[in-house]
Image 1 (spheres, rainbow, N blue to C red):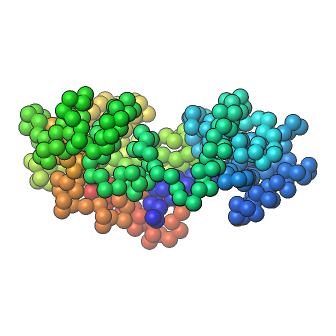
Image 2: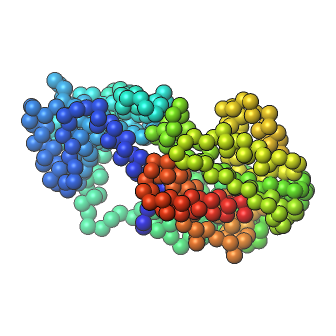
Image 3: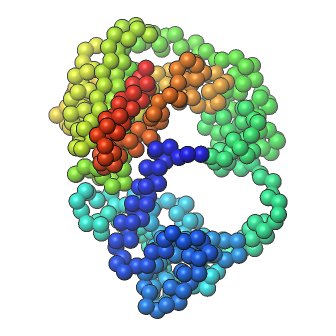
Length: 440
């Protein structure tokens, strides 16, 4: 599968953070453009050379296990292993990640004496030195303890991985987030229990103990929340659910109504001065104004100049384009969060922005409470319900067709990645078309 623009950008961000981390350790040797076998041999040679003190991307291969260490720094009593993450938050999964790498290095015969994590500093601002970009956290004790917990599984995994036939997969709660699930244990199952909204580990365990993986097989007496039972009922009857309050909640919308959608950008390395890493900055919006359902009487849109921070200009334009009376229809609470954030950043505009918040109506909330179709498969996201309720409308023909790719396209514009003016202008048009499709 060809990666989306958003996926490509996230990967490039990670690579850029890794490159900047290496700047902290001059004279390091980068293991680059080598196959794993060659790189592991070269790494071993360098680690045995007392004149080499820093190794980047050191590779290790033993039995059926391979690992790479972002940074290795020679110490008197061994090696200091430094893992680089393009995150501001320390996470438990990072301990597992570092423990696996440390275990493989230990098995290769090298002593890991210290382990630390390099994270993005929330205090970094554009223009600061590279040293200010990172925060280092010592995790030696936690990682080495986890290595000892992992070691008993080495032979077991080694035996499994050497077998000529792969083992039969077993359904686990973690499978619900696996991108291969639909081609693996989810293949051929239209209404998997993972489609149940807010399915907990305990309910999953009880269902699998009963050998139930399809929603239609869940018995009536099985304890489910009202929302979960609604999904089961729609699957079993093959009929949509229409709540008694759907009509009254839709009638609470006052006309003319304004359909609003934002797009934002959020990057590890800030795009503009005085912005913290991973600050979510609104960059564009689309507004369809309707005098009654389905009757568009106006359309407003805004796209920021990528070369500078236009957040205040966006806020002022937004207030102007939404002036007057009538409901502002949003889809999820995202738009409310953005408007609230703008009010905090620009307190002099907060009165006008708060007046917009008072007019917001979350259409997704209305749908979630009052309507369900079995083809929603547990989700009421706009991308999921559109092909079900409006099959003639699609994102398939758009050059930019998802929020991550929209964010990436704007970031590339801000970073000057599009060298040709024609390419930059085309990207801006594509961004406007994508945002317009959301409100349409």
